[in-house]
Length: 438
Image 1 (cartoon, rainbow, N blue to C red):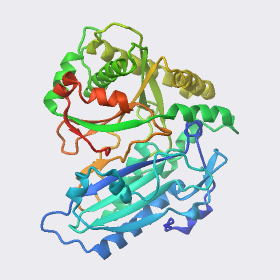
Image 2: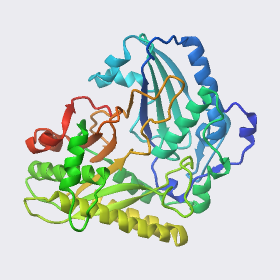
Image 3: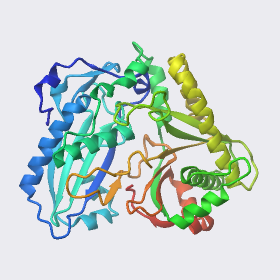
């Protein structure tokens, strides 16, 4: 158990959750940062591990809530509890690991069981495993609790840890902004448990789900941006163009799998930090995002990409207009207005429900340099699951080589089988991988 290196942290008052955090069920998301041994370099394993642990402890001084435990879904305290920290020797080469298709083997790189509900009051906010390969490569794997950490927070923490390891003072110019989320959106005394259970059913769904990774090179992305263009929306971004494309073919696959056409809903996570006034720094902790919701009701056989792209952009515009209401109005009403329709949709079989999350410019591995260069690969471990798996959706990210984009798609198994055999889809999506690793 690694704790903050400064004992002054233990005297800090409890870190208040925001109302937005209170609506998130506690579960771990795993992130894998793979680092290839630099050519011609010599890394002393003992020294490297010692430096990583010391710098991690320093980073916890800044991100002290990660060393504590959740209290009554309102705050985090007990900072002396610390973070489970595992060091492992891996027999083999990192390159072979990245190409590995056997998920039960890959699971050994994880410090804890991810993508499952955890007891909030006793579970750490974070678990770490440092994997040292025979070839000298390193995989730093973190499982973070979504209760207080979103992708932006995870990225900021990793950059701070890496900066400390390089010998600097971290990446947090104004530590007083760490908890600004809970000051802007104070928590409620309590949220009814039945409502929290309904929200959890929105995040997780029963049934067999399969995850696949697809690669879209720059020419494919440019083609999608051109196809997504219309008079109503003249300059689609790569995010919107690819998200609309994935939504289209997920809908088509679902039609074949179910034998009928259903209304479809796509949610997008919208980061609040850059949209609030004044803007918040990226290292502000918590789940500072809201949903943009797009709905497609047409039963027509042909689904036009430019129309879907417009719906996606329109939803983001509406969401941005509503953010001012979130900041100046009734936050509780805003959140219930956001979640109530989603909870209702998630419980209905006659509606297709998909989510889209972008890691572009949020969690892309850039600047997560511990002194060995940027990561060779950044992934998120997933496996097939029958019970309480993440629902259908897409995660968009950089390829890791700066060329094109990756889309990690999770669908129910029958729908995924249809999608990955769709020739029109595969004409754009290159590089279908059988493994379930992002």
